[in-house]
Amino acid sequence: MTIRTLDDLLAEGVSGRRVLVRADLNVPFEKENPGVIADDGRIRAVLPTLIALRDAGAAVIVCSHLGRPKGAPDPRYSLEPVAGRLGELLGKPVVFAADTVGESARAAVAALAGGHVALLENLRFNPGETSKDDAERGVFADQLAALADAYVDDAFGAVHRKHASVYDVPARLPHVAGRLVLRELEVLSRLTGEPDRPYVVVLGGSKVSDKLAVIEALLPKVDRLLVGGGMCFTFLRAQGHEVGKSLLEEEMVETCRNLLARGEGKILLPTDVVAATAFAADAGHDVVDAEAIPADRLGLDIGPRSTAAFAEVIAGAKTVFWNGPMGVFELAPFAAGTRGVAEAITKVDGFTVVGGGDSAAAVRALGLDEVAFGHISTGGGASLEYLEGKPLPGVAALEH
Ligand code: 3PG
Ligand code: MG
Image (cartoon, rainbow, N blue to C red):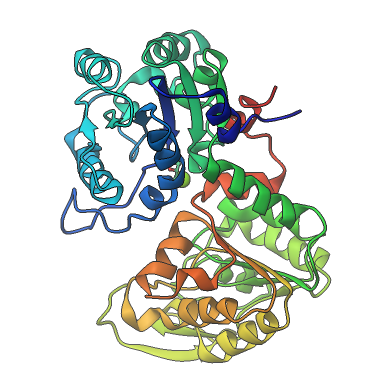
């Protein structure tokens, strides 16, 4: 199986051709200011592909989803603010089409000269994008494909979705993988192949159930698996400890007990946690033993002793994959665990990968130097599904 690349398309010549680029511009907005982009990492990540096409004279038509609107226009999920930011980053205004395959999109594309970039409105405003019905997706894919002469997939964050723009459009147009998708696949293949050892995986985030498949897939391959974040409490419960009002997935306790038994000492849990009286920045909080979380408290971060222990394991690693924050890093009193782990990863003398929207956003929100990491993935679910060994519809669609 081979995948044709952007360079193959550029070598054919794209001057004056209309190229549809599926990007993942699903950026977070500020909570208090909807429409104000909180983190533009995903926009910046697709620039190399867009610039290469534009500079080669293509008429570049960019499409993406944002959030999870329900198949109809919803102004809260408009991509218009993204068009503005994309234009700033490209140094040239981006034409914004107020629909995806309607009059506005067709007019924008018809008027788009080579060397210019247009962005279509949110793909998920159309029910055909995410439909489970092949025919319904197909109709939408036909309309999208009609806008262009070639297709580039650079939406790594969406390759695990069997959606019209990801899975069905490439069947209808000459198709290649963009620079971001190629780089992401290359990096992740290093993690599933023969990684340099010790290979340490750090997992956080709120739910064990979200990470179960990746834990199952990685446990046999890793040397150490460090578990923090909300999910650590279900593991602590599985060891027989009371976790107070901390996040707990009761139905996963038995599963965690089995994982701990099978993990043969590979799984490292926190030994202390920051326990608060409430889920709030101004809540009273103390560091307590992970084995003695008071009944009326909830753990919102791993404690300093655990952070130091995790950092020590990370310091000895040659390969690190990190997905999911260690605590509620958005609230300053509960950010130290995530910061400590992230800083330890930046110092590793080896290959390090940050996977996932939240962990990538944490790196930037905490003001850490992005270049100190080997790779910061733009895909949360996508990178996990890759590591789980699941087939990715968006990648399968690119194969020849
Ligand atoms: C993401 O944020 O993980 C990607 O943009 C995919 O979004 P989705 O989970 O809504 O499909
Ligand atoms: Mg997601």
